[in-house]
Length: 531
Image (tube, rainbow, N blue to C red; front, side, top):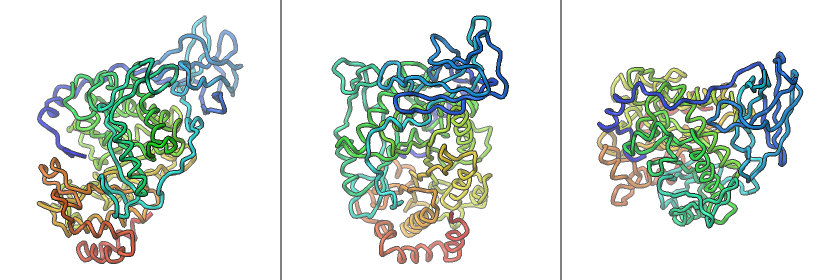
């Protein structure tokens, strides 16, 4: 991403101001003697099942199921269903698809009536199969080709995947009787340069490319920005999405469902297979701003936004993947540095929160840049210190292509499996090697070949996206010459090797990389760390 890892003086000043500030009060997490075990769409209804180790007392001998908005903590209004209190209970009620009373995004809680008042006695639980609503039948694109790259003109490179950014702040959404999207009882006008996206998505698809779209929330419409993040006032590139009030939820749900529908492959506008919600969200100060708080609170707020986007996207495209995103800062444990959270900590917390309220099948995007970012010849660490940051165990400080198996091993743990019992898909949506200053064109090419070969030997990684087709001026200013074309469009050494490394030229590419990296290291890494 442009201006990668660059933290300006204003960001550091913000840290000093906000290090002890917490976000607005979150709704309490329900707990009790009753456990909601599932909430599933079946036809036009929602079926919620619950169990209890002991039956709580009540005035009427009933369990009452309430539907709450994400930001609500206590029941109000009328229950959506009731059932006899016992060690098990099943509730059935109308989903109300497409109406103002739709339950697609609601969380459910069991309450009992005591002394005339309702008290929540269960966990919260959301619908976990929004894909049941999707009607499109478009298959995913090019699952077998893991080789991807960022860029616009990718013909002739034998790539199978690419990525692009969707900047929310470049689009407008408002209620309008003459709008273009009817959603959950309201008509919305959603405008922006969709024709440009249409043209590019169709171009990518026609070149055989599966598209991953990264959703970014710049500061334009404050209703999209989490309330306590609005104090940033636009000084950070991207902000935490707003799930804290009704207006923010409605707009986010409408926008994400609209773009998922538009690009589900059946509307003639092109197809997007993977959606990434936010960029490097553990690096909150640089890429997903929220005033500093504890990692649990931060992760919970992000998990809420991931769930809303997941339900919106999957209800319009049942074959999509929806991913969270972390960088290479894995387990630094630098508690004195409030500019980022460890990716491992955010991942752990997001996974735990989502599982506790209904496991969904999110995926993971990760950026395995070298350490330091600009040091291309990773096979010779820049210093012993940097070498010490990379190990082949879950306690490693950094996640790079050298130890990427640590990430997939971590996700193979039973606690991390999706609701089908499967390992979550991993997409390495940014991976770059510089060809100048702290590297050269040969080492850049060798690094790219090494990274690709590590990926094709790991069944859990579904794609790697090399940065970039062409050098970026903003990245060059930071001594990052990532392109396989230079800024004048001339091919670097890496260009031909990238083009050919998954074709008949694969053996030649491997031989070249071995001559740079060393045959012994190549053989060890490709064998010992394959998965």
